[in-house]
Each structure stands twice: as structure tokens, then as C-alpha cells.
Image (cartoon, rainbow, N blue to C red):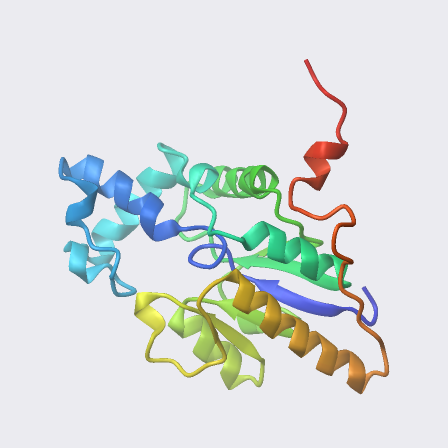
Length: 221
């Protein structure tokens, strides 16, 4: 890891569509159509009529009973972009605050790792914690306003991944994973130039794609 550019990657709202997955469970719990719960929501889900107590209860139910974290939709382009960044020598560090409520930690950790494997997302290490300024990385991507502000307050470069609840924050901002990749490559190139190191992206057509591991595995009965 010495000399590597470390990229700290959040999961929910950045790699995984937590809002879409959680909406389905909340709608079923209330017996309403999912479309009645807007995706243009604030950080605290006020538009859904959810207070903190109800969120904690529904989130615990979603994680432990419905295994939400194992089945969240992946945001488009995430895995392929992270593979290309990894191919360029960037150290991918997953940083997530999924140990949010008590009594579901084992399920949350196991389902997170299972989801990463199923989504074919590359990473070198993974941290489960809320205080993200304590994690050593050269740049971060996050969607949560409080995390972004805390990281920036300690001098960390942070890319804002576009979500309805963070539009008040200044950039750099990415609306999709193509923009994330471009921003991170520029940050890594600047970092390596300062250290007199080169950066070489994956060559087109050479074993590309997030499904490379599946293609390399022997067929299993």
C-alpha cells in the first residue's frame, strides 16, 4: 500500500441505491404503493412522514428481517468504474456506517460483504465506522452532508455524489460514476505528480469489465 493513492468509497447512496431499496420495504410495511413515497427526499426522510424513532425501527427490520443490505440495487456503472480505477493502481477502501443500530451487526457485516461480492466491486480493505475523518485516505466520495462537511473540515478532498439531500453543498460533485472516475483519476494523477510517480489506466480491450472474475472462474455444476 505504500505510495498508493487511497480512495475512500461510501456505499449507501454512492454504490448502492439505499433509497430505492428502503422505499420498497417501507411501502410494503405501510400497505401503500412505492411510488407514493418520493425519491426526492431529504436526509431524514421527512417527506415520507418518518421520524427518527420510526426510521430506526424500520431500518433494523429491513436489515435483520428483510436482508436489505444484501439485495440493494447497484448504481449504474459503479463496479466497472471502480475496476478501472483499481487497474490504475488506486487503492479502493470501502468506508461505511452500516453498524447503525444494535442487534444487527453480524447480519449487516455479512450481507455487506456478500453484496460487494455479488456486485463484483473491487476493494482492498473495508471499514465499518461513522467517524469518517478518522480513516486515512487521500480522497473520499460520500453522499451524506454531515460526513462531507466533517471530512472537509479536516482538510480532506471529498467528491459529493449527487443526491437530493446534498445539493446545497459545493463541489466537486459527481452525478454518475463516469464523472466519479474522471475526478478520481485527476486527483490521483495530481497526487502522483507531486510524488514523481506515473499513472497508467487499464488499456482498452485488455481483460476489462466488472465480470472479469466470473469469466475466469471454471464452470461450476
